[in-house]
Length: 244
Image 1: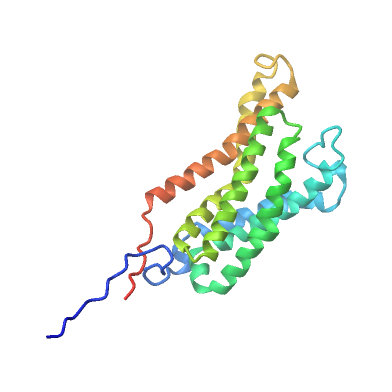
Image 2: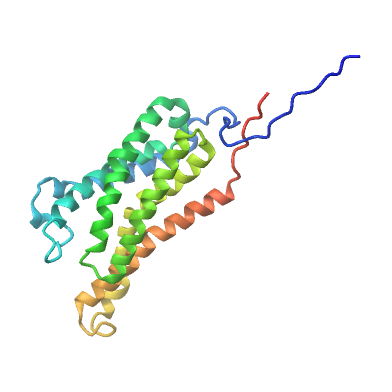
């Protein structure tokens, strides 16, 4: 009598490919086109003053006693612009599925020519920002978080743990585009607090600017990160394929 033994079936793992249907048509994600337009317009508005290398055109006044601040600010803006423009391709599912090789190449640019140098420089800029202690604390927290989310996401891709890679890169994307929401909050808080300059702030414009900068610095990245985490928790993880 011959004994037959069945091969054990391994449980699904994150390293195995993800089961999914055919890629959605690109036009079925209508938010991607407006997002791309917003990212391009933001870079087109923010970058040119720093390409002149004229400190007088800087939108952020360099703090006293920090001679490296302006050149590092220029470098940060350049690298962050690369991250801002390339992140669009990284979060576009149709592009990722239709052009996987391009997705990987652009991803390397996003990590190593965008987030990595911009985040390292941003840690210094945040620590010496002229916009007060609340903004300083935000910058010192944001830069390492941005680096960690991005590098963990890149490492998970190298390990072929693509489900985790996607989740970490969604968080990285949220922190990348937080600079845009930061500017939006800046306008909101200026409109709310400027009428209170002579009352709440006793005419102290510096104090009011510190208040606005601190609030926008924190809300600018915490809300997008929380929204990204909510989105990840709301959408179940894709089911990994089972080994045959």
